[in-house]
Amino acid sequence: MKAGNLKGALLEYIVRNLLKNCGFKNIRPDNIFSYQRGGLLYVNGRGAAHDADIIMNPPIQMPFTYPTQLIFECKAYAGVAGLNFVRSAIGLRHDLNEFEVVTRDTLIARQNNRRASYAIDTRTRFLYQVGVASVNDFTKPAFECAANNKVPLLSLSWFLGRNTIRDINSIDQRLVDSFDIDDVQNLYDYLKDRDGLLHSEQYSRAYNFLRDDNIIGDIVTFANTVNRFAYVGLLETGDMVFLFANTRTENNILNRQGGFRSFASLRAEIHWNSNRPNVWRLTVYEPNFREEGTDFDFYVPNRLFKYWESFNLDRAVALDMKENFFSKIFVFNQRNNPEAPFSIINIDNEWLRSAREALEREGGQ
Image 1: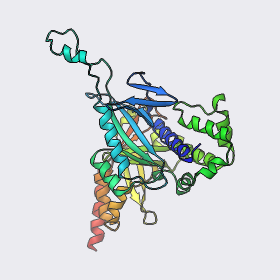
Image 2: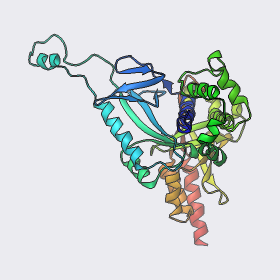
Image 3: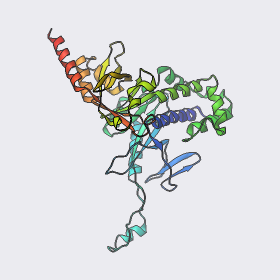
């Protein structure tokens, strides 16, 4: 087993579980346009069939458009992910979305204005969104290209701690060869299995391996814990934030949302501390129950933090960012509320106005 293959399977496993906790579900291949072979899932495009590292259905679909499926290309490289990975994702998206079956028979049928059937294949068509997932961060050119082409990026470094990222990067061939070859193969098969159940007899070796005192078991345990207790928020800019509640899971406001209340207007304030300027605190509450709010910490998306740094972490710029980038956050929460896939959090405009007035008064003193 090559170390690179094991790291890639580990990256896929973590990202797949993250999406599942957000309400995404595995697709079911139709065995024509998508199919499974050798444990891998392939999707047909114009040029060839593509091995989809991760392909899932989102928790909701938008009306008046074809249903969407999300694909993530996973790049488990030790360094930062570069521009070439984003360009490859753009090419893959184009190849999949432009694919159509046109035969000689359908072309000839078009010449007959009284033809009995349409000269197209009767199948469900999808709009594919293709993103790139990486263990480490992305280069500036990769960020710029992704933003300009609306390619979602996801790095494990955005929500796993430095120690865990360091451990993933330290997986090398020497480490892999130190383990039992059958244990490693069973672990790899489990990580690649889209519906794998760790407690099943099929993956008993993987189960025992992950329970042992080893670096890979530590990585999987920590990642599962983060995925289980973190909430994924989507900004209107397309950036993702990972919210970590500062209260017990059953007590936080997102878990108390249910039914129509999941779409009720939640309000929020955003604060930061100069000791950790890249970690902001989101205080979420219902307008009529301010005292029952919940605090969530999140890392400011790297590109937004770099923008703020260019202004020397100016407080007025921070307020502008809160208004322009964090005015509305869509939080996926289907694992706790199956009836409602997400909650909507709006920044409290009255609080924001008060914060601006207070800053102006300080400047005038």
